[in-house]
Image (spheres, rainbow, N blue to C red):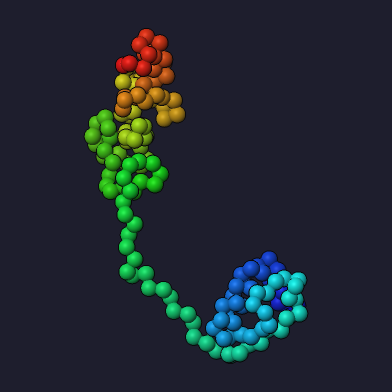
Length: 147
């Protein structure tokens, strides 16, 4: 028995759980309920059954699909192809840029003020309008956030 524990010392929890299940199904017998490494190294485990049927696989055919979540973010499940907020054409994942909960083509993701193509890491979005940092700072300095 000592060799069994030595060979499986990195997976003791899994071995202990497997033996507990086997004991509940009356396949093995041993004293105690839970086997602990170094505490029960000398325990004798007796095999009660030489052959036994495999456990049946659970039936997952009646599982329901998870409900669709509303809103954006990583947890959103898309119900179809996204449309570009600027040109209304389909946006494919390889050309998608997201801002303010809306999808854009990389070429359509532009500053509302100067029409410059924006970088996904360097822009400001106010009232569903995208601005480059230069235009945003200019507009804020002139009128605050009332634009």
